[in-house]
Image 1 (cartoon, rainbow, N blue to C red):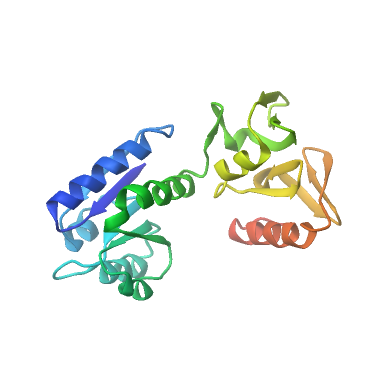
Image 2 (spheres, helix red, strand yellow):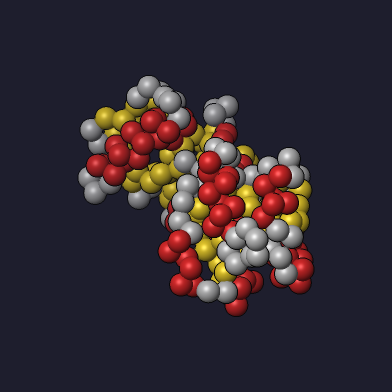
Length: 227
């Protein structure tokens, strides 16, 4: 994975790069951190980042203009904006912009936002050393959760369902019942109050029924999948 940092202030740029190294080290796989001192460097480098931490206020070409160039070029870079001026955030919305970080709260806000971006870019997270793409569904009982894997194995972890839901946010897992989380990539079909996964019909709670159907339909459309 490649993370770009674009800021014309050398000190802030280095600070953000260090935060990116710290956060990315918590995830599996190699990460390359690239530093850009201006928008032209970021756009013309020939090294498209998967994630770009981008300052809004820069001379010559600012962050909003760079975002528009990336969008016009149909680049899929995930953008996190950094700013000193919160009033500029309204101008910065756009495709692949997942959020905003203020420089005065850089150390608290950026790690949270960057973690979400890394999950989006990678499409997976590790749960007790297991790639989430290899988990079909999770059944929880009290503080224990049973991971049902694509190879037929079951792996037990001492992690609550709520904590797992937070870990898996952004990698296509949804809650269908207070006791079940499912991987949308492994769903065969969604019926009335049930989801078929790996040949099993799992229960969907009445409260979540309509939401589960909407999320599955959206997943199918986004992934060009017949549902």
